[in-house]
Length: 87
Image 1 (cartoon, rainbow, N blue to C red):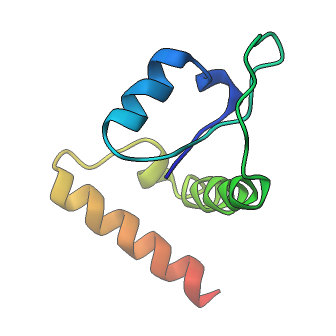
Image 2 (cartoon, rainbow, N blue to C red):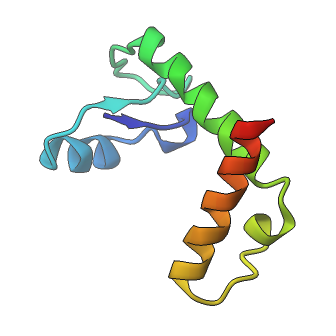
């Protein structure tokens, strides 16, 4: 499943997602002529992901990607997630 905002609603992107064997859960753009079905229950789960990213970005080192290597950045994100979980 690929969860995305209505800004990513395009036939080209939907075809690319289907080509990879995934299902696109993207709300229809209001100007779209052909409407696609939307699983609203699954789309509401996207809100949880957005809230998680918002909380992680409260940590300056995560928001600014202060670490230079991917390994160190992943460690900082892990530590931030642990701190959030313990709160």
